[in-house]
Image 1: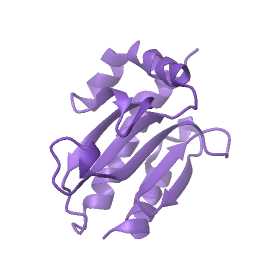
Image 2 (image 1 turned 30 degrees about the horizontal axis):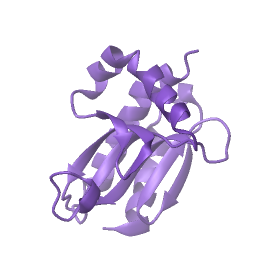
Image 3 (image 1 turned 120 degrees about the vertical axis):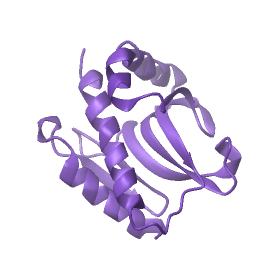
Image 4 (image 1 turned 90 degrees about the vertical axis):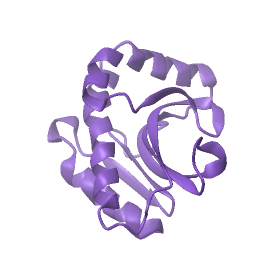
Length: 152
């Protein structure tokens, strides 16, 4: 399964599995990915995302990769760095939930954005479990990071 149908299923997993205490997730599905965020219904520069990325920006990949995690995509690089820096102050707590797979730092393919994400190289997108696996992992990021993002 590829394209929009894959990410529609992942969107349903996000809607059904996100803790209600965080609020209703807004979900935007496209043919190569899905974004989720909370609060304002307009798409947010800081969001959770699962997407297909090309091998040329995913180290150790032959065909493509799935990237899953948190993105800060503000227009100004200092805003992105501030969002990441804030989350890094609680890294011990969220790493206890997410493990060692998340990479922090510069966004894959755009050096002014920031990320906390992992890549799954050369996935079998026809595997019937892949939407569930991706959706659950993205919800893991939401559960682990969003409470720390909300602290002032």
